[in-house]
Amino acid sequence: MTNAVEQKFIKVIVFQLADKEYAIPVTYVRGIEKLMHITRVPKTVSYVKGVINLRGVVTPIIDLRERFGIKGSDNEDNVRIIIVQLNDMEVGFVVDSANDVLDIPSSAIEPQPEVIGSLEEEFISGVAKLDKRLLILLHLDKVLNPNK
Image 1 (cartoon, rainbow, N blue to C red):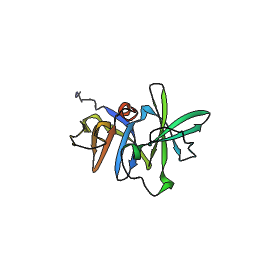
Image 2: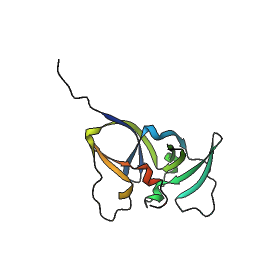
Image 3: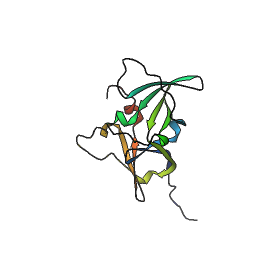
Image 4: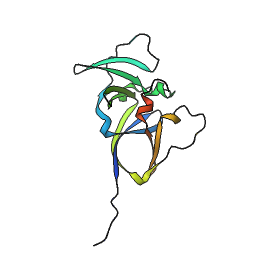
């Protein structure tokens, strides 16, 4: 018998913001919804679009495009809201499209590249190279921290 090293995988949801692909672990994802009416909440930061009533739960909505300073897609048909749960908080992320569920081998994940002056850099936990794709892995704690 050979002692094959067991490859570990991380299952992620892949989504698009402008021309880049991002990923978050599927363990945090509660669902993916089509864009729906968002009720504005006064005196919130600009990237907090408001709240939705999702199956009886009032859920805050964050536009990740605006959070990262990225121009959004003009094609609103593909826009999705990814519902994530972190600790006891459930929020929705507005993204240009939600593409895939993938298993990323741990060996394909590299630490965040040093990009000086990038708005997104503090929100990135790593980068995964899969064939010709480059997936940016998000650090949810930092994305949801209003002080960043």
